[in-house]
Image 1 (tube, rainbow, N blue to C red):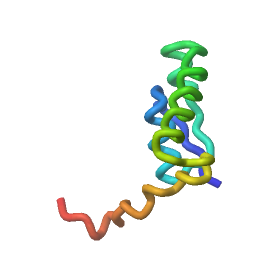
Image 2: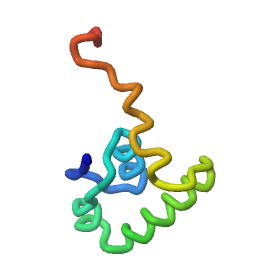
Image 3: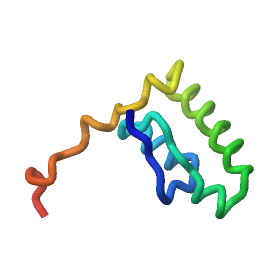
Length: 77
């Protein structure tokens, strides 16, 4: 299981880290900066996102972005 934390402050951040493999996202930074309303905005965003993209559950998109990660030694700078 992977958990993501540190600097997550938007609903989009939560979806991004989940697509990169996190089964859990901790948004304390966002809550400190924006208040508890961020929790509701994030849940609403995720429900819309899943509906628009045709996902039935969070498990349908967790880790989908991992296939696009390149090992550091194969990336040209």
